[in-house]
Image 1 (tube, rainbow, N blue to C red):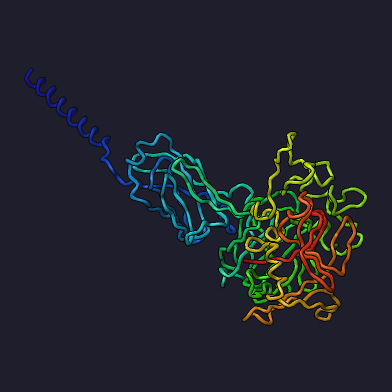
Image 2 (image 1 turned 90 degrees about the vertical axis):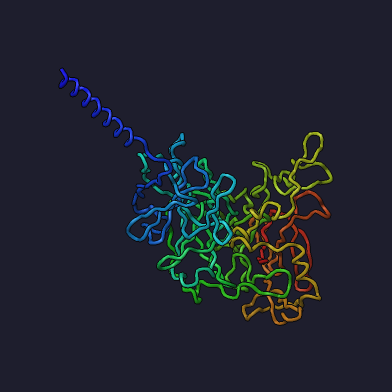
Length: 511
């Protein structure tokens, strides 16, 4: 009996010890640093820049609900490594999370990350990173003890494309790229709720390239996924490279390669683009749509960002080659019915829907039944952030249509000397040579070719010059139908006005 009792006590002791050992294993000490097993799915179009991850790429991983702390995944050319940022990530950070989802973001260049006000903000040299980025959001992961496991499948934002331009990697920061139908987008921040916040520039906003092994990459969101006319511009100091693609349909998610560009010059580069006359802005040496000072370029209705005719038919008279939807009746082309801001199905000037001001007769659709003004009261392209400025939209931000004050500055006899010529540069082109009289800028000049204007399908008064300003007329008629312009003949040059629906020439300026 004593042996039996001894066995029972020994057995109980063993069980008791075993229980203590088991409980000790299950109790994980507090504040244990976490380890991370997060894989990055490899596929041909994973990385925005061409096909695969490159040495130095970094992915920022933010866990929903965590404050200030995040994870970085770094690629060394063959493997990913991880590190906590904003403090060591421990088991305590994850123990109180009710939702186990993360948001991951990759940028094409190193960025500065700052946590403030419940969000992680990203900048490069104090500015948003307007180029491309990859992301994976609301992605589930699991926590196993002190290990976080998950998998990332990075993708481009909706409607993103990239443009790759060869041969400019050596001094890529000297170049900027723009296209009227591409909107630069910056991934501005990720909140602790996992939401991505973006900031955007206007369509055509200019971008710096991100260098790769044989060129530079620019990116942004397509303004349309339908076929359209694209004008791509690349600036290098006062030179511009223009590449046009007519009726081109770009596919979101793709990267498009430009033909090789010789950075030191060549047939596709327009050199000496900007001329400093010592005035408040620099003036372009060519008109919008031209490739040399002698050319008139393209004709634009006021506030429209592309010509109505097919590419190459600017001087056809009468014009019969119109873009789809621009015939507008028997006369065709530049008329009220075709105007971008005309109320659908209407053709009278008082049915214009944008840039509308008070008038004398209360005729416009910008009045209610009690004759209260309900129009927008806007008069310049700046009032709508240049979204209707043809220069801004074709050449990109920083370049725009001249204001009326800038034209008046050019017209001032104390600033410039105007000289009429019948044969500029031996090309048989008529127009005015405008030379600076400002001290220190003598000898600098631009040429304004005569080119007439388009009314309907006809090209009118080609021995005169008609150039838009950036504003509608508000000081005489007050009926929203006229835009202000520079008008010149062989003997005079002054500010005048023209129906907004007419096609006039455009001379760009830059701040």
